Image (cartoon, rainbow, N blue to C red; front, side, top):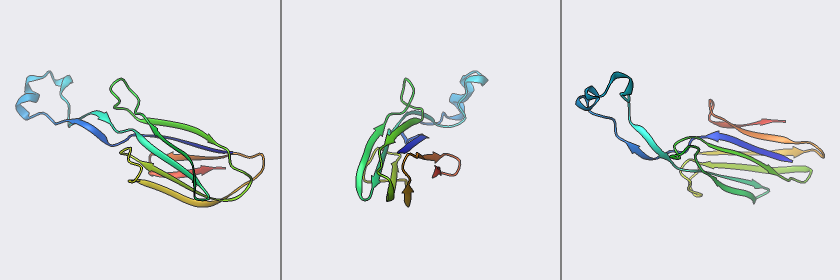
Length: 130
């Protein structure tokens, strides 16, 4: 069994530009945004291939009422025991032809075990917890 998960923010699809100095001065200090404001984000598209066969391809919507938060994924993928070439791709713009992150390795799936693949936000890469 393969477990695939991530918490990742897609690229902004709608942004409110930073306010001018004059506009900022009209607002109370505690309501002054310091930079541009993300109003909406693209969904994150993820794809998992096992031995050159796509076994999971899905878009994950951003969280939040205005869809400006992170996208979350937790997917189980059944994998037969043995050595398999695993490719995981992640698109921050919901474009299945443009991947910001790609992981590829040959993994030995043992019978009755689970291998978890997670995306590490700090290091911006996939990690394995066997």
